[in-house]
Length: 327
Image (cartoon, rainbow, N blue to C red):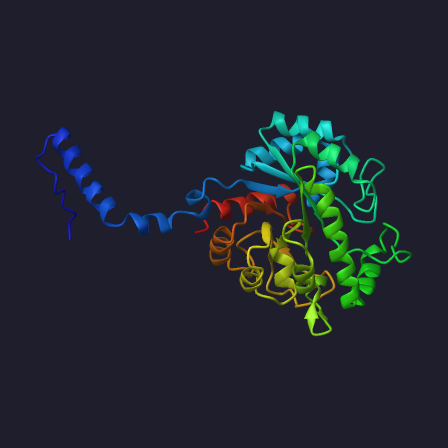
């Protein structure tokens, strides 16, 4: 059937009135449905899209200004660092400010120095607090459990196999040792207005005496002192449903590492996964993001593990394109 113009014969002003009235009636009849169909980050403009810099460490160390400019162009607003990336805190702050980025947090190794100027959480917290205050961050994150004294391996190419062996042998007492450390350090950071959080891999979901390291940390840490940053990809790599794990955490998770994994990833507890851009893997992002917002999650940081087919910035562009449309 031929298209019919129901406004044919009307003057332009009259046609505009009819069209406007029709749109107004439609908007009034289904505003809730319209809002529900809008992209998640369009509905929640109070949220910042952030980036964890760990996979970009080489790029940031080599070209700080250029890397931050690329991130800003992609649409990122917030940054979470992995230490200092070969720069001073003041240099990181200046580069972030120059590109309209805010440094919201910093991952600090618990028992290693990544570089001579980087910190360890087992050392005096005063220099850590000073650098966090310099960059303007109020979050510090511990991303591995505390190893027993005398067992800490060297930071070299044999580190991961050794960590798999050491953490794989953790007992409930070992996880409680980590929880106690988090509580003590969390109190020190809280006095400075900084929140300490724990970031998971998939080690934490291995069975331990009828429970898991993750559940022990949730149970044994003080919610007033310690938060959690859930790495969605590592939860999925452990064979767990991130939506279910987030729901069971009952508000303890304040930040997410938004990471997707390829369905070829086999469930494991030894830090193995095939990381892909967001929306290309197995994670149910619409369901997860809605639950995260309802649960009070305020930090949303994109992270994809290497290797990258066309470099990290191309992978980030794919993830950002997905985040602009995911509902």
